[in-house]
Length: 117
Length: 497
Image (tube, rainbow over all chains, first blue to last red; front, side):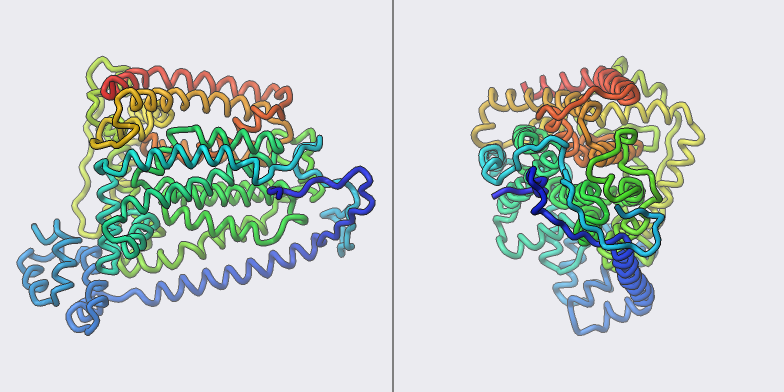
């Protein structure tokens, strides 16, 4: 079995008749694709921008959420935004000590530099 | 014939031969042609994987594993690097647990073969069956690239997205805007998006690639397939730029990376397209110091060394400003690095020459790995095997570069290949303006292999004066750049010896 582009037609190529799309139809299809992809990009950008939580929301999620995963997500975002770096280390340690075991492990293992300040 | 200037288009029936490959007929590349070279490629890579099974990790390998395992354990990514490779590690960790590292190495063998198939396909597109086979053999035997399958670095995953993207783009340009299937460009854009999610610097490639598409697909559709004699150096037509395919490519790319950009907005509260590694590179590269991880521990920076002489006396460097958000730190570092360059233009130019020297150096990551990693298994535990391996790795770098350069100048009817390879090399070298690690040259290696393979297959012509001049100048620049690398290369070898 061969791979790659098809072989040119044989010398008696009269039997090989290839129907190709016209330039207009290709351009029409391209415009449709550009519109569709542009709409997806715009929607993703808008949804992404609108869903950026504030620090207050993240703090609430980190301490009040019933889901451990949601708490970990919120703590990770707070760390990367520099929220805890701006505060005294003891405040972070107290905050983390009040978290469930998995969140504590997450902070001590994945953000050990911050925890060991 | 359909013309761009015509009004409503008339359906076109093409009855003439449509040579998608060089004008004289060649036999098609077959799957069976690839069995032997890619079998050898698999054997070499499996041998390397077996040798590395008990070896330790070095440099970024441990960090990749830490991030991937943490992601698997807590469901959250905590790193600053592009997420693709840590994500793959996290998935394998979920499946294989303690055997993650070894499973990843074996998986990388499969990825590497996938890359090899695409390298052969691109070569066959321009030089027929012989070029495809030559490409597969060169890919199999090029040890600096093969070695990445045994290391825990993102290069193999990156190439398994990047090379297929290149294949679809080049084939689209080769077939022409009318004849090519419509999905090639969006697929190429999505694949490049995935490679950017594996390696952040790929983001720099998107705008030049869009420009290349617009340029390579311009002109009359029928000209795309055969190339016009007067325009063989770069392109295939002289009509308006093909802005539609270029826009589709860019939008597909951004559609692929945007979900991660949105995630970054939540995490950093800033616009971060993929990752924030550029800040660290700016600190190391656009500064007074010069830390090359390839040469670390060699003592190659001693006074009197040619690299050091080219750099000259370094002015006072800068230290990163203290900020709490790492995304801000990255922007600050880039700003400070640019200010440093503006304040010390001559030192900056000299240090860029050294970065270029390091980028094209005959040493490579596998040679470095032999120095810094212990615990190799058979057959690399035997010193003679390791020395032989290192020696072949070092020699193959200049050999491939010169062969590819010869191919670039002499390949017949290679419009889209020549221009795409040129763009890839220029973009990759552009990253060296930031930092010149040999690991950063990986994106251009498959293109060099393709150029060399087509050249070896015999699909050559007498080069134009312009091409001869460019190729000669680049060859001289390469040979000059290898001179300052001679010291570190010999030191690397003696450390292995």
